[in-house]
Amino acid sequence: MLRKSLAFVVVALLLAAGASAQSVGLVLSGGGAKGLYHIGVIQALEENEIPIDYVAGTSMGSIIAALYAAGYSPEEMRAIVDSGQVREWVSGRIDSRYASYYRQMQDQPSMLTLRLNLRDEEKRSDAKNKSRLVLPSHLISSSQIDLALAELLTPASTASGGDFDRLMVPFRCVASDLVARKPYVLKTGDLGEAVRASMAIPLAFNPIEKDSMLLYDGGIYDNFPWKPLDEDFRPDLIVGSICTEGNTPPSEESNIMDQAFMLAMHDTDYTLPEERSVTIRRAVGVNMLDFDQAEAIMNAGYEDAVAAMPQLLEKVAERRDSAYYAGRREAFRAKCPPLVFDDYKLEGLKRAQREYIRDFVQVDRRTPGIQRPMGFEELKDNLFEVLYKMPKYFLRIDDIAHSLGMPISSLLVLCVLREGKISIGEISERLCIAKPNVTPLVETLCARGLISRQRSDKDRRKVLVGLMPEGEAMVERIRGAIRDQMMSWPRDYNLSEMKRVNNALAATLEVADDVMRRRR
Image 1 (cartoon, helix red, strand yellow):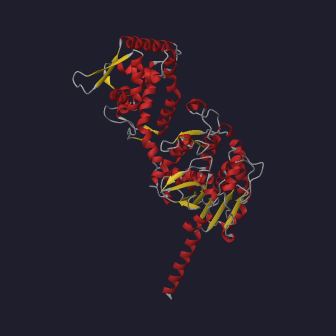
Image 2 (cartoon, rainbow, N blue to C red):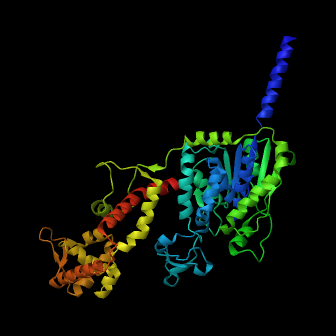
Image 3 (cartoon, rainbow, N blue to C red):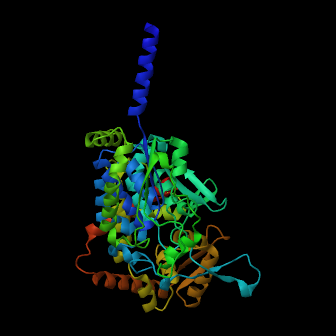
């Protein structure tokens, strides 16, 4: 009898434990700017103590899901959106301070400024067909969002060891393998890279290369990845947040980006298992890149989630208050290392280029011989400081060369020869110009009487190039033109700022390769 009683108690306890351990999975659809709807949904769920144990998303839904899985609160996500950052990332708009660095000067992409390139094909034998018209691979630069995702998600990705099950909330996102013509579920790896793959809208963004695959926006094959979430986690309840009408053809009112994407999309199954699901849905009436209505979109998600709350509360037995969420975030963030780069390598440059950077651009080091740690914000500031400010300090060598009636390359050859007689090979190395291209420059300058060629006294096989008196006079004219141009600089151009910019350039060059390697 006692044994039966004990068995009954054990079974009852197990049942009770099962009931209290009710799990909830949240699935977020793609939709571009429409996807901001999900932030309002998550905010309403947390405020009403609805647990979120698993999260999955596609495209913009993957960005929101990843931020949540990485420990960002709904309030923090709202703040990011309110700051205008998301609009800048996804639309490709360029900060006006740095716009001069980019070829595309408009603040956002335009079909009217589509760049067409004529690319030489050296291997083609037919001279008439040596050039062909090449369309750009994408319209929107991904550099902005790449930097943003690295800054926001890399610490969490590092804390999880690249295992999305070990994030604050286990996470899944879906990309599209266009070669295999099927969705690809991302479960491991770099979190930022996974999100970039999931939101790589064809035509708009370049794809992500992973394991010999080219991954595009997950919305092409699965715009609502509830099945991958259900297969991996089997939650007791699935909450679906859908911000699009879904499976609808494009209309004449849709912009070209929306039309292109909708034409590429396959039908998605938006129907959740009725017995264990709640769907929160609205066909948000904005275009994919219309982030100007962000506040209204987020508020719409909040309102719809609140309206669905009676249904949710009926299905969810266990509640989790704000203290639970705060504690969970604090515990996970304690595991996230600061985003600091402490190992910089200079790669991909020729010896002469490396020597130039080492000799003329000193890396700022706290201790001689020891590379200083650099935080992400400093790295980013250095990068943009170089891109924006360095051109102000560049001498307009093209103007000087034009005033002297010679190409820039010839001017540079004369300046190199000011140090003394050297060979054509040494000129090539110092100027990083191919040797076959240096020879005609030398011949032209010889014909003008500016330089001469003679065999070396030490090695008769070696031909040295040196300045003639007319060449020395031309070099002095070049020096005078440089002085005149420097004197015309505005007063706010000062030596200390130039040194600071040079240090930023050096530090950025040191770290850039490492950053790009991590992003790949």
